Length: 619
Image (tube, rainbow, N blue to C red; front, side):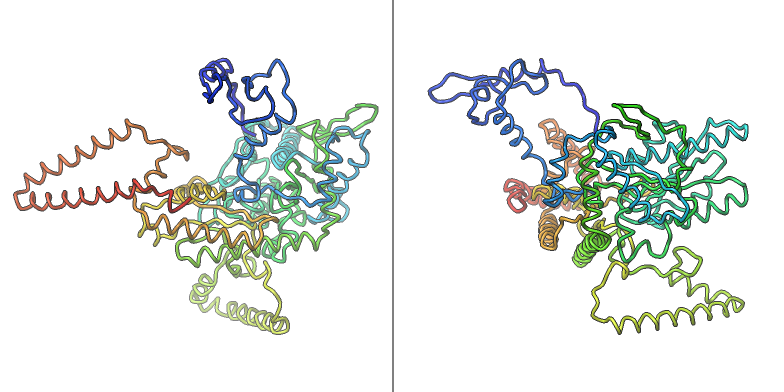
């Protein structure tokens, strides 16, 4: 939630009182709502917006006014910018409405709801591979941000207690994360006095946390590593198991034990259900260093906004000092949250989804999302204008055993290195050919099977795309920001923004595919994207300057001063050109005159086009 600033109501109301509506046969009336509501209050009086009114207003009037203003919002189902779920089915809606008044902090009053919360924690712990003999513990939160903070606090406290026990200072804790980390992770570090070691990302690391850089930034004050299962930029999973091995090696050399917290805000409800999983890499409680995992129930958990979850693999990893024992309203409860009162209806809907859909139901939902995301990715690249930074539509890269990210090209280089390695390589090739033969046998048996996520690179159902280099060379005046803006005119919300620092010279458009995004909508989206792109290609730089005049991502109106300044600058350039032409001789001067004539002719044509306006062919 963004910070709200105080607005001076007196200044605004004073200005509004100068506005008068002239109607035929009636005197001027003061008002700031000009819609014809049935209430005399709405048509005759000022309705304060930033200060509570002295008298109330009829409910139906207020409802009509608020509804009309809310119509200006984007449509949730066409908001392709957000991971947050926008749809819940009818029975879930009933449960939600029936339990709107229940408070999660009233344990003694609502024992059934609290029991549902406990069951959700247990289900998630088993889904994420909790090991035999471990007693998982967790809690519902208001979202992944709170959950990440709780996971970070537990790591910090465990580190402090260990340092104090060893007689060492605990003044300079640090935590490692990639530059692609969501702001909640940075907030944890800033709010709770932990140095954030934010490591640069690159195309080589899929714009995610780079394991090699992790290795270089570990020390005795590192309280843990935040690893993201599903980057918000491109949907890639960060290599949890690879980083886990680096931490193992670090401990073997130094004796320092560094834990992992997995931020699975989106991936926690995607990876376990897909056929692809995480591409053969472990990421959850199967890895001993993974002490806690968080997820957003209101993303691919398919609940409405306002619920997240955090689970620790064992109660020993949640320091007792952080747990509060409360004697409240006649009962005793144990609390470890940053909030106290919080809605319980979302928790009930979460439990409903888990029981109603089951493993197969969730698998069907996420596999369908990934299928639609692949279709969109392939359609965009088929245009020749766009290329994807996300990889879920591409076959997985083959990895040599014990090596992360080794490509086929690297294999061939290795084969040429030395005859000493040749035997090993030949053995590996034989094993690989056996595997391929086995795979082809299975494929021939199951030729008619539909493709699944297992046939592609694992990741979130996210499509991140940009203009191809060829397109940018041919149409340098066309900007991706303009595509985003014109798609918004057609009600699609598709953000355009830079990749993380160090790669921020590249901008991407991003589409998040959710449960409610149908095949039919993909068809419509691709059609509109093609139409908008073609329109921009057919118009030149002068036309598009109307849309591309911006500052900090916002449209900047062209003022009279701007026009005057542009005119003066153009006149100066023309004058300089004329003077230069005279110096270079009569022949060049004549050539310059011809060019100037052509420029003036072109200018007339451009004015003519601009007069018609680009909006005619777009909106």
